[in-house]
Every structure is written in C-alpha cells, then in structure tokens.
View 1 (cartoon, rainbow, N blue to C red):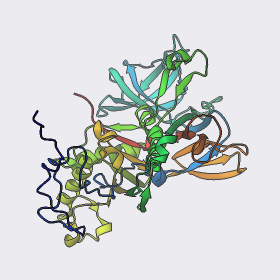
View 2: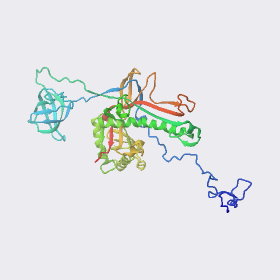
View 3: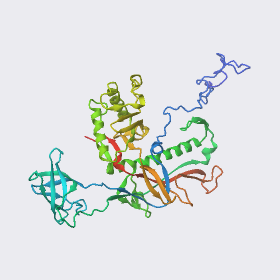
View 4: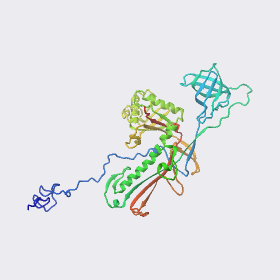
Amino acid sequence: MALGSFTGSAGALAHLTPRPTQTLFNDNYLSLSDMDFTQQFLPEVYEKEVERYGNRTISGFLRMVGAEMPMASDQVVWSEQGRLHAAYDPVETTATTVIIPANAAGASQNVIGPGATIVIASADGLVVEKAYVSAVSAPVAGVVTLTVAGYQGAITVHAAAKIFVYGSEYAKGTSNAGTSIDASFEQFSNKPIILRDKYNVNGSDTAQIGWVEVTTEAGTSGYLWYLKSEHEARIRFEDQLEMSMLEAEKAAAPITPADFGTAAGTQLTGSDGLFSALEDRGLVYSDQDFGGADGLADFDVILQELDKQGSIEENMMFLNRSASLGLDNMLASVNSAYATGSSYGVFNNSSEMALNLGFSGFRRGSYDFYKTDWKYLNDATTRGLVGDIEGVLVPAGTSTVYDQQLGQNISRPFLHVRYRASEADDRKMKSWITGSVGGNFTSDEDAMNVHFLSERCLCVQAANNFVLFKKIAS
C-alpha cells in the first residue's frame, strides 16, 4: 500500500535548514503554504489609533454664549417686557373707520381710546395718513371699530393696513381724558428633560486585555484598555447634553407611558430647545446669499430687523461652512473700496490684511459682528448630515433677574442652561457604576455598567434678538 504525502512531514519540509540564531535566511522560514494551521509571523500591529476624524466632539457652543445655573423645581418661568407703544398690523379701513380684528383667543386687545391720534399706512408702508379717533365701539365677536376723522379728509380704504398711536388731541376744558394701559409682558416657561445613557462591559471582556494608544478629544494621549469605549460613551453623552438643548422640541400632545412601552409612568412633554424657540419666537431669515452680488443688501435686511428689536450692539454669528465662506466673500468684495459704510476695525482697514479672507469680525451700521464656524453644523453625523440650518446670530446681551437661591439680582445671558440640583442631589452630570466587575459589587451581574444622567433645560430669553439662518424647502 502506498503512503500519501503529508503536509508538514519530513519529506515536505526537506528544504528547511535550521539555524542556531533567530536570523532570517532564504531556507529557514516557514511560508503559509508550509503551515496552514498557524502563521509563522504575526501581523504588524500599530498600537496607536489613527485620528482620521480629529477632535470629534461638537460641544462648546453653550459654553461660549451661555451659562449653567442650578434650579430646584420642575419648571422654570420668566417674563419678558412687551412693547411700549400701541401698534396693529394688519387692520381693515374704510373712509371713516379702522377695524381691529380679534386675536387668536377671540378677544380684542385694543388699547386705543377716544382722543388718540394715529398714523395709518398701507400694507407696503408707502401710503401714509394721520387721523383722529373720535369713538371706540364695544367689542363685537372680538372685533373693535375705531371711528376716525382724517386730518386731510376721508382716509384711504385698505383691506390690510397698519396703524400706530403717536399722540392725542383734546378740546379745551376736557375731562376724563386719556386711556389707562396696563404694562404688557409675556410669560414663558420651559421644563427640564432627563437624559440618560450607559456603557456595559461583561467580566470576560475585562480579562481580555488589549491596549490602544489614543489621543483624547481634550488633547491628552495615553493607553486605554476596554475603558476606551467607556471614555467615548462619556464624551458622546456630554455632546448629547448640548445637542438636546439645541434640538429639544415640546410635544404637541404628551407622550404617554404606552408610547414608550410601559404600562405606567410619567408622561413626556419634551422641552423647548434653541432651534424650536427661535422658530417660534425669534427671527428666521431664509434668503441669505452673502456671497452673491447683493450679499450686502441681504445682510442689511437683517440689520433693519434688528433695529426693530432690542438693537443689541454686539452679536456673535455661528455659521456652517457654506454661510461662513459666503460672508467672507461678501466682506472681501467690499473691503478694498471702503465705500459702503462697513468698517473692518479688526484689520485696521489694511489692504494687506484684507488678503486674509477669513474675516472674524466687522462692523456694519451701528452693530459689531463676530463670526466663527460652528462644528455642529458641519459634522457629518449631526446637522451637517441635514443642512437646513446654516447658522445662528446670538446677541451678546444679559438680563438682570432675581435669583431665588442666591437671594440677589444677577445678570444672566439671554441663552443659559438650568439644571436640577439641591443639597441632596446634583443632577448636572451624574455617573455611577453598578454590577460586580471592576471592584464594584452591587449586584450578581457579571458585568460593569457605567451610568450617565442629567436633568436640564435651556432658557432662551429675548428670542426676538436672535436670528436663525435657515434654508426653506422650495
């Protein structure tokens, strides 16, 4: 009987010549064809992790423009002052009357009384007349009619007009003149949301050591074991704390326990994040093309709207790459001539410095603007994936309020975070470990669970001074 050839037998390996030292020669190594059950030489493994995405964290926006303060309740409430002067837009006019429609609640908000003198303008504001209010009707289905006499005769009929009070006029010996107007204000509120996450590793994996040399998002470097994943879970959760303050949305109807898979529990109502608050109460600009031929004219539209609001002098612009480059192009196109009223004080209006087209600050009209890129809008796994929001203009202003915990008036940025905290528990950023691995014995589970929790909400005060740059779907 003939014997077959066996891989690895003396005959098959006759070409090998052993050497007394660990030195490579052309006849003393095993190739993969010689040994199919293992590898003579292990792969060359790089210990250091390649940072192909650089610093991946996107937080930092709220640290730059806001503050974080504790609170001890389920809700934060604040009030904002109303307008000082009375104006209505739109109203309907006839030759002798001005009809003020009902508001959304079905009740009239008229504060104009007999004797008031008003300005009446067409919808485009180009046809302007002045009139005297001689009588005011009682509200009928929420509608109030002002009987007016035009100083230049009958007033023009408008289906949609604008009016505002500029003064009053009374005859000699008049009594009971004037209209008492209570100070108007708007009240806003927000509630904190509870954010949670965890990292889990089982006991067997903790015994399988594999080191990786990394550079953290904070810039430090070193070796991490299985805790590399825990480290990334932590910074991912910290990013989500900020992202939730930007993206949070109040639910139109409460989300019931059945909606999130339980038979009992507290209803979820959401919270008011930055983008939601600005779309509801702020300024939304959707026509910017700063780099186009009329880029400066587009920007001036924003200035005109800011004049109608709080007129805060210093403002910060956080933009995505497209809007940032467009603004750079706009400033570069007008800087050399310096004939448009723009002053680039940061660059001393130097033509040499203007060659650096990455502008970071400029002045237009009576406003100062400081521009920076916002990584959150560029990252491919956050708003860079979507692309509808191109930036935010944030006023560098503060409001003075009475702090219940400090017992004194303090100044707070218009944009700030409130988190739940008391003497018993600080829920700004909590983390704890459960399980039976890693020296922490709290259960019979053969695993380590690292838990993260925070309870917080965002307060967007004076939202009318913010501008949200947003693309509108055509």
